[in-house]
Image (tube, rainbow, N blue to C red; front, side, top):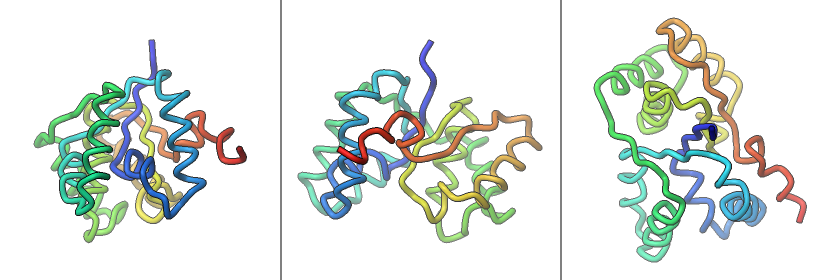
Length: 160
């Protein structure tokens, strides 16, 4: 059985982000070689973020990437909204970043064991992760792994 991996918007977006070539290479190689090892998930919040991209070609390419990789799109539900509010209230995620809190909460309430992000400021950072784990433990939710694609098999592609 494959592991479940939730991708926040920064992951498929990095596939087409020419401003960060190493991150882009890792992401492209990961989708090419490693993605098949996971059941992949995103959420409607991510789709909404992608829809706001002004670059139509990038937006369409990301949607195609999602479709081509059979990424399951999860709905936003009341337990996730409630949990995301708690992440913000308890200081795990800044109030200015409600989408980040929703990504994590949606993955959590759906029992996804891992989350990948390139967001080092609000998601892939030790203090938010500690607080998220503390809140999730309090509610008997799964303690998910949170990291970049590098910990999900992508580390070997950064030095090609």
